[in-house]
Amino acid sequence: MELQRGVQRWVVDISQWNPSPSEFSYAMSFLPQHEHHSITRYLKLEDRKRAIVSRLLQYALVHEVFGISFDEIIIKHTVEGKPYLEWNKVDQELPNFNFNASHHGDYVAIASEPLCIVGLDIVSLTIPGKETIPEFIQNFSSYFSRLEWNSIVNASSYDDMLTEFYRYWCVKEAFVKAIGTGVGYRLDSVEFHHTRWTNISVKLDGRELKEWRFWLYDFGKRHMVAIARGHPRIATETYKRTLKRTEFDEEQYHLGLNLPNVSFVQRTVEQLIPVSFKSGGNIGQEHDACQAEEIGNSKP
Image (tube, rainbow, N blue to C red; front, side, top):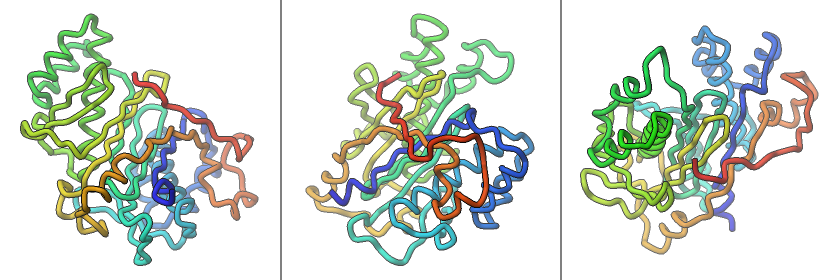
């Protein structure tokens, strides 16, 4: 099915990429000049690695799906910061092609959809600073509904409490990123329901949104990822203007809503570089550029 071509899930483990300064500059040379400051503004190498891989994923994904060369790809952002592809040649088979990237800890990932809007969030189950788990979680109590908060604080152990906290946080972030809102969105108005983190559904201000699907996966190494897929009608107005279609008849929309949610494919940084340029330099350890491993098939 042509529509299925727009459903992509890629992830890079940046802990496996340890570039020299020249290798890092070589990788960055494939990105437009205007993207460079958003990478070099970070002082720590790990933050720079997350930033560059996030952008390489976006350009490589568009290149693979549409066959557009890197230097012809134009990626812009809404005022809220949501990235989108600006392309005049509308692909009738993938009318609303959109994507979302996320990074935390060791992983940087991207997800795309051809019809529905998509949100993605990765979390590493860590505690910043020297706080205890209850102290850390308490800082975010206002972001959860009473039902969600009770589920978190009544977990059987502190470690389970932290895991449950991040599960809710991850799906909430995936949802608000899908609709294109900024960090100031009222997360407490977004309430998630689930059956042991399957059959996940959401209520917005008490009203169930039936035209949405959610998935929560374990990436290993104490990381998890959430994907949100839903209807563009509740997206921000600025994000709606970047989409070709925001209204569908029921049959058309459910075709996109019920597309198979493919597994994440693990990529290396080398695999994100256009094939025609790969012989021109070295950006990391040797590996088989054809190898791709599927991960993230189970709930955390």
